[in-house]
Amino acid sequence: MKNILVTGGAGFIGSNFIHYLLKNYEDICVVNLDLLTYAGNLDNLSQVCDDPRYHFAKGDIHDRALVEELFDQFAFDTVVNFAAESHVDRSITNPDIFLTTNILGTQTLLDVAKRHWKLDPDDKYSYEFKEGVKYLQVSTDEVYGALGATGMFTETTPLAPNSPYSASKASADFVVRAYNKTYGMPVNITRCSNNYGPYQFPEKLIPLMINNCLSGKNLPVYGDGMQIRDWLYVEDHCAAIATVLEKGVVGEVYNIGGNNEKANIDIVKLIINSTGKSEDLIVHVKDRPGHDRRYAIDNTKITTQLGWAPKHTFETGMASTIEWYLSHGEWMEKIVSGAYMSYYEKMYANNKL
Ligand code: NAD
Ligand code: DAU
Image 1 (cartoon, rainbow, N blue to C red):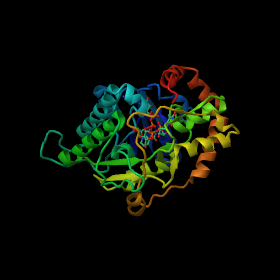
Image 2: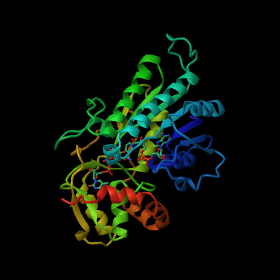
Image 3: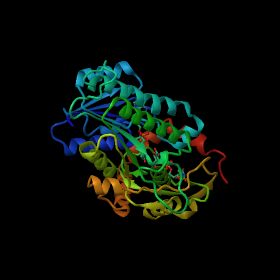
Image 4: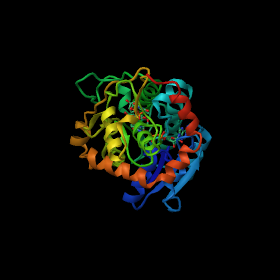
């Protein structure tokens, strides 16, 4: 892993991953290809923008000519694809862009990488690729659908996505799989549970609730708030991806999670307590259509076969996350003063139960 293309690197997890790479790998060249949609924010990378090992390219993963140009210029040996439309609620109101970016964008990256990495790209029957190249698809536990009160997702759980977002991510996973089976492309797929930490866009549960607490706004809990997510501190996710890049067996899928199941309402109450606010701020709003009740990741494969384990507990991770948002008011201010506010008004208007 020397010349690495990180797509979606101006978003939440991608920017944390770029920080992680530059902190932990001396001899590396990182190119961040990001379209800077509403979710992309170069402020997330202000500390590294002058690092000679880091380069930024603004553009679409679905723009084949641009991706070709970057491959010609940087001779990547590694691609990590974070770029995606990532918010379930937005996928319910506007699914089209989710299919375009998450499925077709992924196929464009795979296809350009194949042309550059396959030893004889014109030989349909050859499976030979350059030494040491790898494409890693950052997928999600949501592709497995929803669980009842018991059980966990393993890598062999059948895919059963329920939202346009998760359907697009599952479709992309199948395309990645096909490039491995048909062409012999060296790939891995990782499926992680819910992340939290610095630089998360405040449309997502934890930063939205922190921001609303700090500005004294209502806390919109969907339905009864008893839906369960399995939370992982973002830095642990970044370390897991680096582990899969280095040690993952080609063609394999790895689930990533930290055994941290929490009900939404308990997270909201924890944020209320940590910010010294009142539970009176909680408002139960209409539930998300098709809302998955529970996710839980079985991480046995990555922990036993690759030796990865999370370093942060939920308590320490949440404490430093809340502290980060408290001390980065300006970061949040810049976001919530722009287009985010009109999204927010529309999303939560007339939505009380
Ligand atoms: P995010 O929405 O914060 O960031 C997405 C980034 O992709 C943004 O910078 C955006 O500008 C960029 N982007 C969007 N469309 C693009 C395009 N066509 N071309 C280039 N760049 C484009 O998302 P996130 O929460 O950081 O998630 C990153 C990845 O991880 C996604 O693939 C998501 O499915 C996956 N994932 C997220 C979580 C989570 O809890 N957030 C958990 C598991 C997996
Ligand atoms: O599981 C991994 C997935 O986690 C990723 O693939 C997605 O990209 C990421 O957005 C996240 O999806 P969720 O739908 O689980 O995350 P979100 O933060 O939107 O919601 C978390 C839970 O909180 C979910 O049950 C819905 C609920 N919720 C969310 C919001 C924004 C509320 O109750 N109120 C809210 O205002």
